[in-house]
Image 1: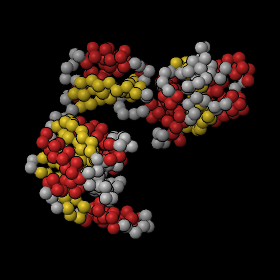
Image 2: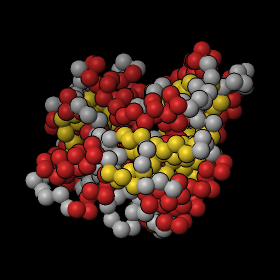
Image 3: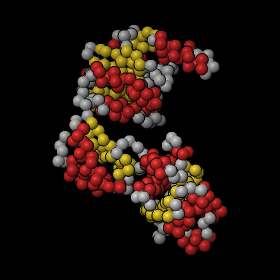
Image 4: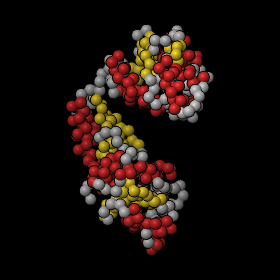
Length: 407
């Protein structure tokens, strides 16, 4: 089965908002064996919405219409769909009760306009919104199913997970597929892809997708049989070794946090060129207060000396971007916060400040574990922001590898 998605909103067409909802829907549907035939973006115009939905129904038995369900005059999706299907709009009382309760909890009088969010096409199956006001709706029409969803990404995601996907799975039949994700860092897609494909080519029923990004290369394996997918994944993990940091949907910071927690270790960070990005990534993981003690953004040499104990002679002789400086930074931050583990980074993010010997993109990263220091030097490419992000993820990965090796 193939589905179609109609994304509604002038803000999408104007480039003010990026459409993430179609990706969320596609991923959720793929897991129950339903692919995507087309994705259409349309503005907040009733006639245009109606034409887009009508066109989608010609090719697909399952059509998602996302956005344009709010209380304001430019929210025209419900009117367009009801006109197209010749359905009356009626009030869904449980949703209206929920909206009233939300306003009561906020100690606010409910505006009359807010009640528009409780309107549904007559006969629709309704899915109460667990995190918002506008419900999800499913309407059967001449053998097809039209699903209306709010455009707020968090609300759409919650509705899919809270029962809508299970509802679709019962009503629609697709080939159930099995997926496994392998997450890697430090590998180049063009180098590893041929080696991996030599493995997967022996299993034609398994599809392989490569998804490079600043946090590494994700490799997605998809097939109809769990056993054959697991065989391919096992072979690939053995091939790639320590470059694999997860075989599920976990980020580097989360994996590092699990290692620290399992070994009962604490960590602190000393950042120069990354400006606090490493600490931000670490503390984005729930429960990171169990192991993260704090950090220093030691952007200036004076802060490196005063807070971290970097010697002036080291800075004069070797420079702020050097193995020697990073080594003193990481030991200093461990002393300052009394931690078992430390991460330190110093580099040249650009666009200025580089020299022939120390070009833009040169970054030194140090990790200390109970006084033993490991330092790596990298030469990153990209603009200032990209160099900072690549440095932060490389620092997390170096710490992960050092802890995984038992050092």
